[in-house]
Image (cartoon, rainbow, N blue to C red):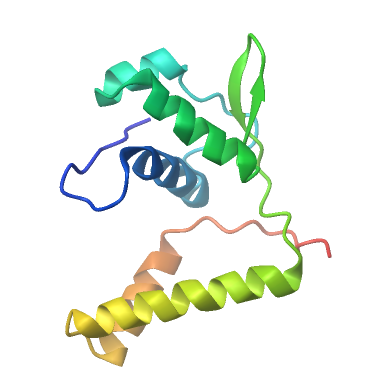
Amino acid sequence: MLIRIDPQSPDPIFEQIAFQIKGAVARGDLSDGDKLPSVRELAKDVSVNPNTVIRSYEVLEREGVILRRQGSGCFITGKTSMLNDDERKRQLSLLMRRTVTEAYHLGFSSEDIRKSLDVGLRGVHFRKEKRKK
């Protein structure tokens, strides 16, 4: 698994790592049951303090993306958010508003934003089964 840290990013390193792992799951590069590198291994590969990787894994575990098994490591769960539909829709709306606002201030048109969203959607490996309510 290739993770790249952007030292110029305003996002904390632990969030960059967590987001990239979530991205690998969304693209289908990682799937249910796949084992993540150990904390020490990933810390060495990315050249960060092991506590940073621990923090990333804690975030991913709290969000249900991974499951930590004592003595065995961390594994991808293959699950999506356990939030109820209303809360998931509210969070999606907030994400979209933030994205559109930032894109506007970067000087992009609505058509540019739509095209970019389409490119992003093509890069995601959506599950075929329907969500259980």
